[in-house]
Image (cartoon, rainbow, N blue to C red):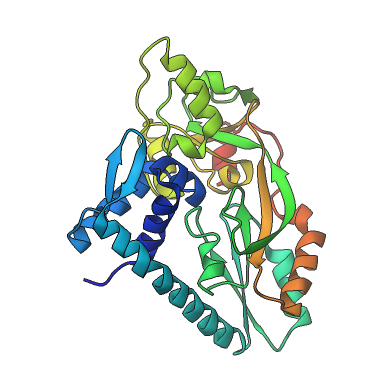
Length: 308
């Protein structure tokens, strides 16, 4: 079986930190996801790579050998990606990646009009691969939601926006202008608590007083919204993303006591392209058009039907 390079990167992060929690934080993924990937790698290699204990994770002899071999392998893979990406860029294509909910049309149109010799493409990303597309050469620039792993990247801050909770349309909180995190701690969260640390911390405090239902996870935004519509939980999203996925059966309401989401433009720090510099300038000029007009912060069922 071929060795998955992403699993090797995850393995090296745990090896560096000697701790799954700190490695997951560094990688900006949930710890259970990281643990599953390491277990899958151990099964594929037929060897125990870490001795797990209260004090963290220490390399076994097999893990020590893998760490020694993986470092040059990952370096070679990174060099290969850079060479291939450079060859692709020289073919006359410029790719702009973006997260759901962000409107990048103005910058892309202006850039394409100024460079008719280029084929300008757009690429939708997710929380998991919004920076990976820069490292592997799929995109030249990427509109990202912070936080991200900044290693090997340059970033230009563009905008910030409130966060909203997506609720079933018949929920008791539906129609309120704003809600607080305390209003939401009894709900099933349809994403890992590490991605909503403010909710996690408030819920942990409440859990000291009474038993709360455990969070249940789904993968894509579309799946999350379907589960919300069925009354199975809630999801916290940037307000623009919540508006993008407005539909009958759900509503969204701004959360009053949670940090805003920051949006930035990211690109590889190893590149010195005048095209990237030009796009960065255009992105800054058009940053005010990144999200649709906010309107009211709470959407009723009628609002969702009109918007969707």
